[in-house]
Image 1: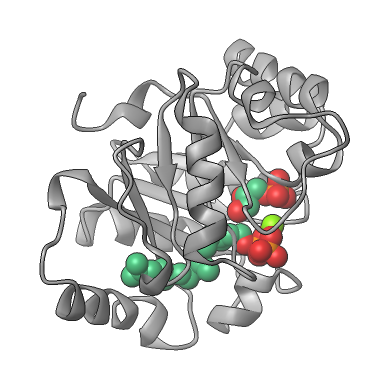
Image 2: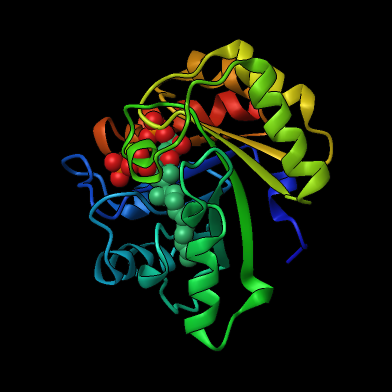
Length: 234
Ligand SMILES: CC(C)=CCC/C(C)=C/CC/C(C)=C/CC/C(C)=C/COP(=O)(O)OP(=O)(O)O
Ligand SMILES: O=P(O)(O)OC[C@@H](O)CO
Ligand SMILES: [Mg+2]
């Protein structure tokens, strides 16, 4: 595996272990949409048990699997995982979500798997999302603020991934464009409200990788496949 496999990705499917799949859809179907990787994670209702269940269900299919834990106590030790993408929320209201949870994780774990652990520098943008409430994020940010956060993440904190997170709503194109222009080596992930070919194409013009979440739970395989196609065409 290369050090930064996401350099070659266009599309991530994020599966929330606390949410159902649409009638008749299996995890195998979602793995076969052509997505470059699956991230398993969500903010609310996450347990080791529901994480394990999704990872096990995806394990036999040929797509790289990553866990995105929302807290240290749901991190699972499962060899089917390529690794762990650990959020750090740059615009969080409390340092706990920037470095505090991470410090506690390392302090209590005792046997860190650093070769399979990476961070995602989140900028949380939708004040209505659970993740924004949970981390008390300051979402009142303009393009200049977001561009500056992205540049700080890349240049000062050496982050390999900046994640512009609009979870549950479609973002402001001007802001995503500003983040795209502010990042150079860093891989820019965009997630939020992607629901069809056009919405995927719009954000894939500015971000390196688009992340699709709720669509998989609310619509299904064909809809996800359209977003993969748009990400590949961009
Ligand atoms: C140190 C470790 C191992 C964990 C801490 C990691 C941190 C800082 C988490 C805070 C941010 C967070 C909760 C990230 C989880 C991924 C995410 C943003 C999921 C999307 O959340 P929503 O869409 O708002 O939530 P639901 O869909 O669950 O309502
Ligand atoms: O669920 P949606 O709105 O697609 O967002 C995807 C992802 O960024 C959520 O963490
Ligand atoms: Mg969500």
